[in-house]
Length: 438
Image (cartoon, rainbow, N blue to C red; front, side, top):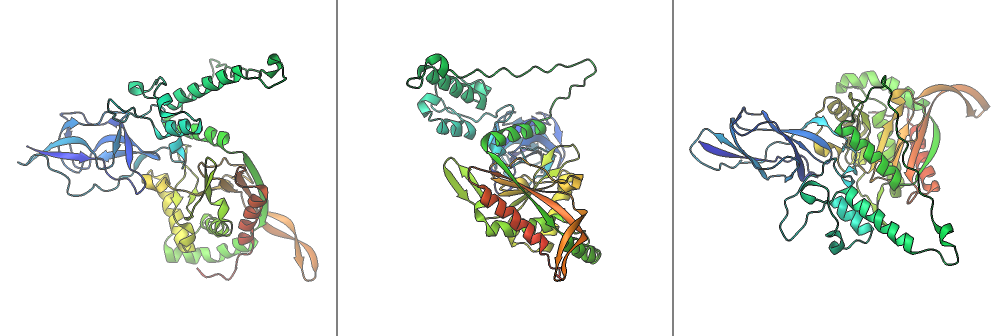
């Protein structure tokens, strides 16, 4: 019998590793070609790894909850043949998700997994996750001091909670040793926050455990609010010309392209143009540094049938035509609904758009999608009486109106910039060319 080395397949340009979540096959089990062998989790989505060959699983080389690198051999499979240690001639095809996980929000890599994955480590070096290292750097904790922290994770690994507890205890000790000059110690003491109120569960209540995806969404939302001081600006836009134009061309467009044109690609185009006009909204923050993004990658928040959230990203949106944007939006939306997104589809967003009008909402105050600094919500388009200025004077008419809500990070986006940006998006929508060809 020959041996085939099963490698961790590539999952996108920006995905270099994955955590082994569960082995679906055990040593001695027969595997058919293309049959899933194990489940993995990347920073964005959960996936199954299929076997490219038929045979018997000989050995599992990576333990559950351990990180594996793309291209690393994770299992050996006995197959028909005479040669041992047969290597794949090329990387396996990119895999697609089996169950999307909203680590799917860009920036979620800043959070620890519920059960941290363990990296192999030598006797002379202790493994720390990127998040733990980042917190240590921000708090001025030296590598030597970091080595003294007791870890509660797998094999003594220091988790996010371990280092936060250490920092909290350290700050508390320092505060107790110092009081402002001239202020009595009893007055300098800060009031202790009361413990969280316990939730009373009655016999008629139903308890529902959060799934992994919902836990990560919850952690990401809390982290975003704690990271960025949120400010919101609102604009009402008259999109009558836009609505009339779409009504005029949508039938011909669907007949020609074989798919519908929605308002979403039009909103994405307007946002892309406004980001070119105001590039300081297309940024991220790293400590005291502002990272100005060259690429304009628009994430579109999408609700899944499960009720969870995922944010696929349109890469280089400013370089696509309206037809290209429409096809990209439809493709990502369809693959989101059918759980066929690739891990790379949710990476590298620089700005997020959420269409709350799809749920009949007129406006909202969305939470920023870290590490981005702004998110735009577009509300439902409704007919309303409005004042119309004409050469013969003002008059009242029925117009198609829509609210735009921009949440932005006040550390780097001030009210003037945020307000001008959302107004520019509205201007692009209001001044739509009713004779535009597509």
